[in-house]
Image (cartoon, rainbow, N blue to C red):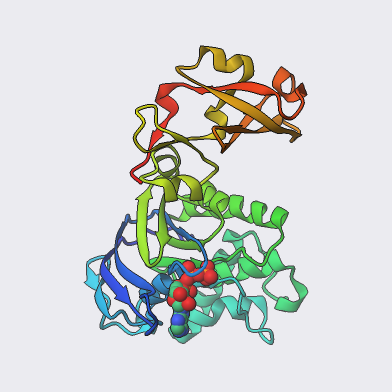
Length: 334
Ligand SMILES: Nc1ncnc2c1ncn2[C@@H]1O[C@H](COP(=O)(O)OP(=O)(O)OP(=O)(O)O)[C@@H](O)[C@H]1O
């Protein structure tokens, strides 16, 4: 048996949630998540990501607004009947139960037949590459393996949507990257709708079909990773997602955003559409090249150059031309 399924779409309308503090945790959220897509809620600490996830799950009740999963309004539906899978940072496995019993938990609650439970548990463990681990205790597993058990436990109930709150937050960087690859692959195979919370922008870029960037209880911009990276709506998005140089617009009104990889320095700036006078601050070796820090009229500018670029050999304080092609300048609303 496989756990392949078609996830359901999620529609959030005008969600407001206040805990009684000065500013609401959710200040009016509108968001459409396509069936079977991987949507990430990205934002700094306190932006409202977890509150939004808990509201969808049913652990928090919104003050206002509507949540639809598929065609049904889930406001009146209790947590246990929402058919939502959940995975959190601290795996919350039952330490006294075997891996198989942990995974079986949701199915036992639903009173499925024993043979059916065994079959689905086996399929779920295979899905997360833990075949043969059913008889072990969670204590005998690594952090990454425990997180995969938590994932199998969430998937085994064939949820309409899968909510994940910083599931890789407790893992070290190498393991996190390995599990990101597995998770992306798994999502492609099973077709579940996933709503994923992280504050790690690289993780969001790597995993998501769409990213909803949150700030102060609002969604600032939603789009594909490429849309947010190349067409940020405003300065906040431009600087939150990836690095961004901010320079005065050639028109003299407002600023433009320029990615370091589109920032030309030294000889390469000679052919640029827009040329500026810069001063070298430092050139730091990164392995793949040098990271150039410079200033232009008192503003900090970062550029990336190849290992053999003569600019990297100059002394700090040297005058260096800086430039960019007009098409690479990102117009920012504010
Ligand atoms: N149970 C609660 N009682 C009171 N205030 C809360 C509660 N939970 C969250 N908040 C407040 O609501 C706001 C949003 O918190 P939330 O946990 O949703 O943010 P987050 O983006 O998930 O942050 P983090 O990345 O740190 O988990 C914060 O100002 C937080 O202090």
